Length: 148
Image 1 (cartoon, rainbow, N blue to C red):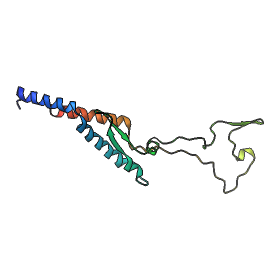
Image 2 (image 1 turned 135 degrees about the horizontal axis):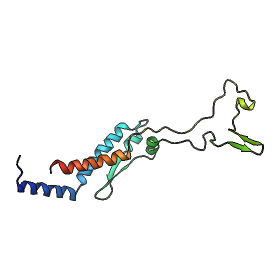
Image 3 (image 1 turned 180 degrees about the vertical axis):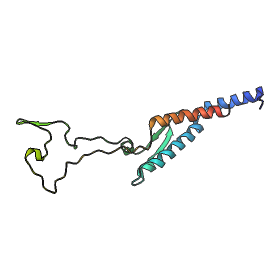
């Protein structure tokens, strides 16, 4: 296939136009990312899934938003102040490993004894910021190089 100078200049003009107003390209990228996130989000009531959206942040960037608990779903929640104390418990009579009654302290627990609850939530990833950034870069590069 032979490319004339006129064809090359036309392609160059089209590239310049698409780069000067990238909103349609960004809209397509945003739609694809939201679709992927919604397909992979853990669903209980569907509120989180329905809240995932994107919007323009200026002329040349997009931002994603969702209900706040989406961050906790994606990254998990570590133990908090209600988790069994990780530091040794101490008082004026000396240190104890944990303030719960256990057989080593001379207390025999009955059949209904349950270990103290551990709070927290495992991560249930449905998006990755690095993968999203790479995807946007790859799509932008592909859009630029497809016709040029």
